[in-house]
Structure formats: C-alpha cells, structure tokens
Image (tube, rainbow over the protein chains, first blue to last red):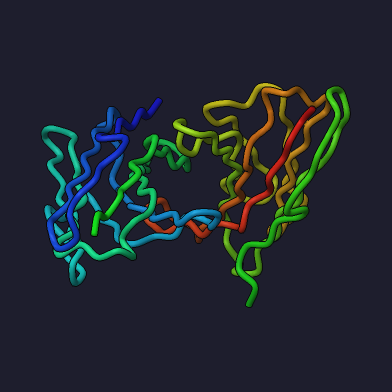
Length: 112
Length: 113
C-alpha cells in the first residue's frame, strides 16, 4: 500500500524567511497530493493541493512542487509570518482505492 | 451547513468498556474516513468507506469496527477499549472522486484508563 514519508519533523525559521517541507510517496498510481495545516487544538484544514498533471502550483505565499519521476513533492512557504506556526501534513491519494494516506507531520515554528 | 460533525467531543472510558463514535456530514459526500492522531505519528487511517454500503480497512484497523449507516453517517466502534486506543479521532469526508479535498470534523479526544 501507499507510504508517505515527511521531513523534517520539526522546523524553526526566522519570521520573514522561507520554509520548505518535503514528502516522498511510494505508490506510482497516486495522483493527488494535498497539504493540510493544523493549528493547536483544531482540525486539519486544506491549504493547497496539486494533481499529477501539474508540476507546480502557487497560491500567494504558498507553493507546492511535484516531481512524479522521483515521487517527491514539497511545500514552500515564503515570507513566513507568526500565524504560519502550526503542524503541516502532506498526503497522497490515488486511483487504486479511495484511501488518503498522510505523512507524520512537520511542526513549524516561526521565530520572532 | 455544518460540514462534518463528530460526537462526542471528549470521552473517558475504562479498559474493556465499549463505545461508538458518531460522524455525520451534510455535504452529500460519498467517501468517509476515520483517522486517529497520536503525537509524532501523524494521521493514521483506521477505516474508510468509498460509498454507502461499503467499508474497507485502512492502516490501523485492529480493535475497531465501522458502520456506514447511510450516506450521511459513518460510525466507529470500540468493542473493548484498551489504553493503546487513547487518541484523538478525526472523521473526514470528500465528494466522489479521488483527487478532491477531504473535510475534517472537529475531533473526539478519547482517553482509556
């Protein structure tokens, strides 16, 4: 079955700097890669997603890149702000079944 | 439009007790999911249901059962709770199709003592 690895588990960056979180997946049939943000005590919420027919997608300060050959995808947050502090999860979903498999999460700290 | 609603929000059980976590969505979604979240372990899939009348095992199904009661409701049952099942449980749903956003409920914090 699908396996999603996420790195790093913790990331601290200075406010205003960029943050990058990386994920790899194992199932070449996966074709949908969402990213979720979870604030303390809250539910996960989608911040951006990418489908396998696209290599990059951007939404204001957030971008996601996908390398299907290497089975890698990454989240890029530019000009980080205090409200970006949260746990971020990557996930993969494909055509074999209806599963959505998540990585273990990255706790992002934005330092003042 | 409430989205995905879970009940209860908090629960304390004694080892060996049983309980059912309820989940309902009002978005006419076909697919529903149950995850557990533990520190450092991310969101692990317990069971999912691709459509009314079907259920399938996820990554960590042992000790759990599910029922897709109708299109709106997907319940998770612990028949004999164990301390290892102490966790935060999330229900999620998404529209038919495998390249679509999943929406999460607010979670149930379960403690088994």
